Amino acid sequence: MVVNSVEPTFMNSLPFSLRPVAIDLYNMHLLREVLEIRQGKVPSVLAQKYNMHHEQWFEVSNIVVLTKLSQFTISKELKLDYIEHLQDVLRAVLDMKGATYKEVHQAIQFYEASVLADWYERLQKLHERQGA
Image (tube, rainbow, N blue to C red):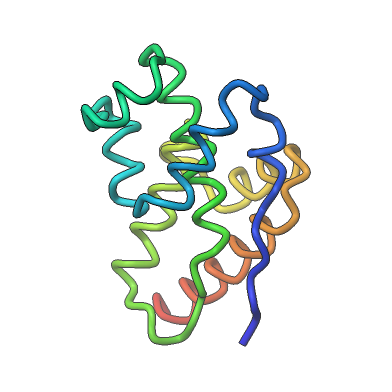
């Protein structure tokens, strides 16, 4: 089993003023909750704590999703529909809906996000094995 390390690339790209929000979301909120924030459903507690515009919430939530995804363990127990859901989430956050595996992988490599690239490659291999 491969132990994932956290993908630092995206968090490191955030302006310092947005990092506390990203750290809060990363540490205290589930992926599902961060995806809801990305859709504009910011809990009132967070909206009061962090006075940010919709675009800032969108940017921070995208970065947190990319960081959190690299932490998901890829194992043979994952069901095909769950694998496909993770792929869809990644494509949506990268604004690449409908993109092929190769296109998404190239985009991740462009960002020099090696941990996420390795994670996505393992996810794709599992997808190919289960889809066959």
